[in-house]
Image 1 (cartoon, rainbow over the protein chains, first blue to last red):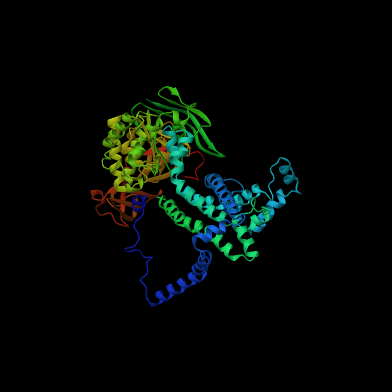
Image 2: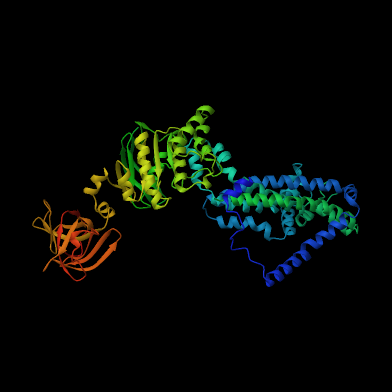
Length: 288
Length: 348
């Protein structure tokens, strides 16, 4: 893959006009930005990590043995994974519709896709409760079927689906725009069936963008607090997710436990970043 | 394997892209659909391939109607304007794709791909990705990919438009040679008349969704059937007038209009390169400007009682001796064509 990228794009460096020679002002500027970043990101991260790892790795493990900590982490991980994967499929389909079709209401639909990024997630949670709460007709009906949504796991899944919807759509869209529909027509004329065309011609160039968007959505879902705290009911051991668990520990004054669980979430989120960046670069490099 | 297109019409909403077009393409011929952009040429090609469905009319390939067949079942090779190579597949994988999805045995597939790579001069490029090829190489890969499943007919949509002028010249010759070797019935779409005339056995001129004329390049060049064709094939002078006693007279020019009733409005078209003019007093007109167009010279003059006149000559033509702005000239018209005028012209 590295060979692919190296040949598709001119290698950076050399006579690239974007690289400035550092003058005095440049050095001062970079110093300023470096301190800004340290203050905002690196310092709090370091303090939290230090705090969380005070008791060593065994401290983190001990925190996970707190009542319901491990259950919360499991719930967070699987709901995030399931919703990210569901949105990988639906997001790709949505991007397809947005790119390939011109229809009335298209720009409205495009705006709707971005909405989860724009509205407070607390409000998103409230919307789900208003729709599926036990007092609402729809909520009561679902509950009657033995499938309660609000204050139950399906509510969490619904909230996370909403929250991480934009990521795959927005990562796939530009790559799809760059694909020539004639490639699919070429496959059809050469005798390929719809499924073969999808699998062999359409999906491979989109795969890095889909995977990158899915991981981003997954990372975002891991962190989700606002909508879930409203929607899930926060029943320890059943609908309590890690971010809400951390909040509870902070509220109860047990900051060590909060920090220890945070370190776990942080480690996963930071661990995903290189993969996301690599996939994004790959998706970009496929733009020929 | 001949192709017959019978009375096809295609509308996109209220826009009529193709209107009652019939074409007859003989087996083994290389034909060109020639005309201005947006005239419906590509739509005709796409209808033959099955990528588009005609609203009316039918397509017959090798004596069999193919209207009921899906594009994947027509066994047609198609070369797209921007080649549409599969970007994540190597040259060899691209060429082999059609054989693979048709479940050709691996060994015969490998042999066929190797043969095509030899035939199209792509040796050494087998493992390259399309992004690592030049425009001309991409085109050859696109043709190889289209030919791999041994199609009955080969359709090429503006095959030379995506490469620069020098490579284009070379690719034209190459396509002609390839066709002479393989004799696959082929149709290509172009808006460039020199391309159509230098490559094709037969030319179909398409404008605004209609077939204007068909014939060999010489037939079309020598005898443009419609005013559109005459204008499309090069710079022309246009004069309108009414027939009087069997002649259309415009200023000093007089063209016989046999069997046309007196008073009928007609349009006279003189091609800029069908004219001779030389310096002469008193003459019939005066030179306004002399323009150098590379290896040709264009003379802009005003003809007494007729209006502007444009003529073109090779740069070293002896006729040009003494031609300069302001000089009087004599004009000789070797070929003039008359076309009916639909409405009354604004007075002769």
